[in-house]
Image 1 (cartoon, helix red, strand yellow):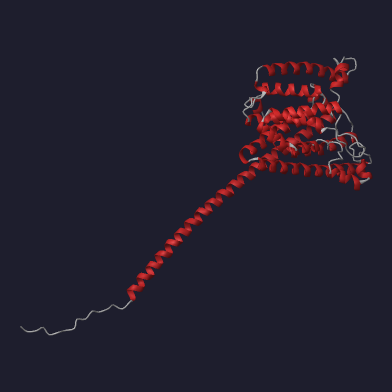
Image 2 (cartoon, helix red, strand yellow):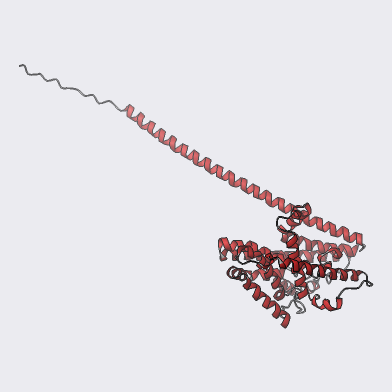
Amino acid sequence: MSYVTLHSIAFSDAAEVFIFISGYAAATVYGRALQRQGGVAATGQICRRIWQLYVAHIFIFVILAAEVCYATLSLHQTYSEDFGIDNFIDEPQVAIIKVLLLQYQPQFLDILPIYMILLGVFPVVLLLLQRCLPLPLILSGALYLLTLRFGWQPHSYPDNEAWFFNPLAWQFLFVIGATAGYSQHSRWVFPGQGSWLPKLAIAITVAIGIVSISWTIHGAYDAFPGLLSRELSPLVADKSNLAPLRLISFLALAVTVAHFVGRDSGVLRWRVAQLIIRCGQHSLQVFCLGIVLSVLGYILLTFFRDNILTQLAIDLAGIVAMMGIAVLLTWYKANNATNADAVIAASANFEIQRRSIAGIERHVIVWIQDLGRLWARSKRPRTEVRWRSQPYPMS
């Protein structure tokens, strides 16, 4: 299935897509909160999201470790080194602390830590975007170039190795996505709205696509030449620090896709596109499920025959499972929203009825009190007025 992924037609892959969309979505959602509720409310929402990601990261680590340990005991094969949890098995008292500190990143668990760090500094980026749209992009670009020049990078457990995704480099792509997402709240005109940029992006995308496809074919058949492989490989290979040509390839592809597939495009209404959109709307849940399924798929491929049909069956089953959980979560969310609206409407109707009944009770009480007063008056003895007879003088 690696031959039909994004990396087979471009120098970038799903990691660039994830980071860019994360920045774009963060600026769109929290930028709206900043405009409507202010910086404090937007920062609170960002912190709440970071906490959700942190809990998900710890939870997925536990599930991954449980999967690997169970497979090792059941199938009598060692998988701990394949997924990088051998240190957790050897010294759990140290590894668990490193997991909580985001310094221990086994296989598949290296993307959420960088996302949490990028969201941690995002309130500052958001305020800078509000003041001057290009300013965060300029500062982020300078940090990216300095990182490439001086080799700045954080280190991880256990061998003090660099993070697989260097946040000091990948933050540039995140800020680019955030700038594009926040442009709808700003008076600045984003460069993507010009007429020259899509043409340049299409040309770059086509050229890189031809070269990348030749590399993919060369990987399967050595006789097929890989175009400019020796010259361009050093500019693409460094994924950890977001190699410049990877960045250019993705940005060109993103502008090209945005040019041909607009917000109102009919392609987005296709059934398959709707399923993909549902997965994006529940990205964290689908991402966590994808990690669990990736571990399970790897174990199944090593236990059974590793042929093309088995790989296709496992990959398709995983795709169907992720789309299914996305549809289920969408239905569950919509059902809860409907129930909530019904409860609110019922509460409003009950309050109206309660007030109406209370008003009727007050009127009845007043009416009964008036009747009581009239009845009491009717029972009182009447006062008789008697005239004392006096003789009239005779004239």
